[in-house]
Length: 426
Image 1 (tube, rainbow, N blue to C red):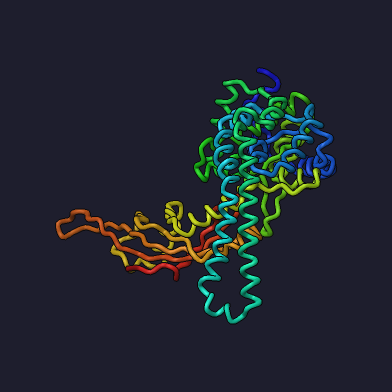
Image 2: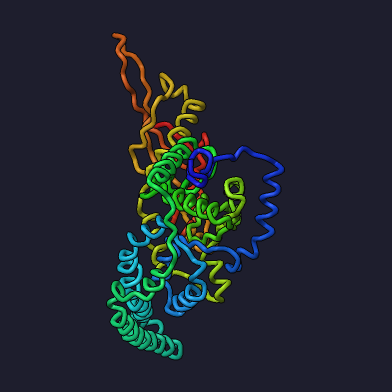
């Protein structure tokens, strides 16, 4: 058996029986070197796929600063084989949808704002004409917005023309091609990792990389679990701690407190230390690089994505199949007299609507609350006069509250709260 092979003795959940003394030691050492790791000078730096893709969506100033950082630290920057494959799969989609389309839409958005001023003036002209000075100021604003829009449109079209061949002449790709790729997982190890991912997903008793992707049924749901093991094997083989920069801020990479602050996952610290005697410092890429490069990193598609998600959330209905157990519990506990026999099955045949969401709070604090309501069918069985089993369906109506998080720049419906008095039997 190879010493560093990913197997039963060397994987995320191997050797992880709790030990107070060892946990104390690992946490003390982790914190002791955290500032050094955050400075990105001491340990090898691994980049997540979302970090590589982020810089197609930022300003040229931010992009150039990042390229400078890459060139100065290229000997110490790595990506794993799985990250490389994810990047190659997503690159063209990001260029087309998150760069070319979004940039070309910027003047159109300004034109919409200008039109709002024009429409406001036209709607209220009969009144505004009594206030000559204010009316003239509004007309000046209208004229200035039109001028700025025309100028912005010209400049952006110049930029788009300059970068029309970005798919082929890509300065980011040129620098990314120099990043060292860690290709250290065999086919047998990959099969083992995927099996263990499915095992942990079924077990559902600990937090593990890729857990949230599994819950959300994302494509490539075991990707983070694979990346974690690629890095862990590198740490073992090279006897070193590493830094992992990611913009994936779901609750499996970070512990997220009630104030939406991100903290290291304790069991990840314990797992990597027991397996390698080293640490994986998992850091928020945008915050770490913003502080280090003294720039503000924000995707120019962030607000567009939020607006799109908001529209979906306002209009889209959600199937809450994963709440059926809770409905069954409440119906059989508090409403049993309404049915001839205990409810055995729930069908949420009607869509469930999420409403009353404070989107400003969601953007400012990354978390807010909402309400949901909908209809379902409670199925219970009885027997007729001939002794034949018959199925009865009774409609019920429900409402409740839910937590809504802005995680990794995407809207996520979190905890649902349903009380007995929130259900009405039809």
